[in-house]
Length: 223
Image 1 (cartoon, rainbow, N blue to C red):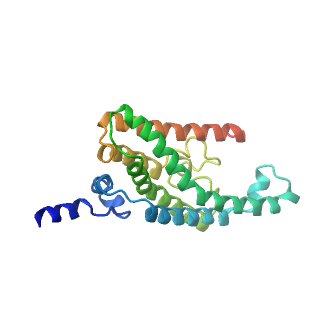
Image 2: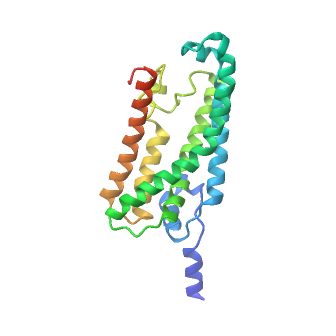
Image 3: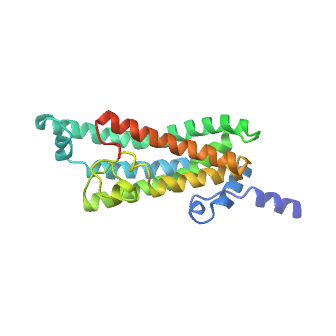
């Protein structure tokens, strides 16, 4: 009976809500009992809601300010809004798959026996932080206006920048997710603290690199 009770405790399901209050416990549960499909569905729904709010925040004038001809702005705006919502659907899935695959490869250098399923589950649960951050920021943008590309919780938002740039990548929920990634790689993948933080920081720096590339592509200032 005691053995059965212990097994039931070990197989306790991780909780998305628990990621906000006790992430360390959730990562241990994920290691023992990785869950994927239902958490992914919930995260995806939140992303769709957040991106829909972003679409609502867009207007014709913002496109005109970016150089889009007035006579084409309305058509392009409608297309952009649909694209934004579609991106909200595929972003969680693609992001989780790619990050888990890269982490699996890097984890092998740390002699970890973590499975791809465990990393899929870990990254899905971590993504709830970004999903809530997206919904919160877009809800605020819908209420107060402004550039929906700039999170209120980012340095770009705090400093009232016109474009996101690198400062847009230095954001509360993004940093929170980076910290949880390091913790998750320690608890779920059983990596050393140094190697776990190295991987987490690499992912964070890469995200800033994408922000730099995006700013350069748009011809916007990087800072």
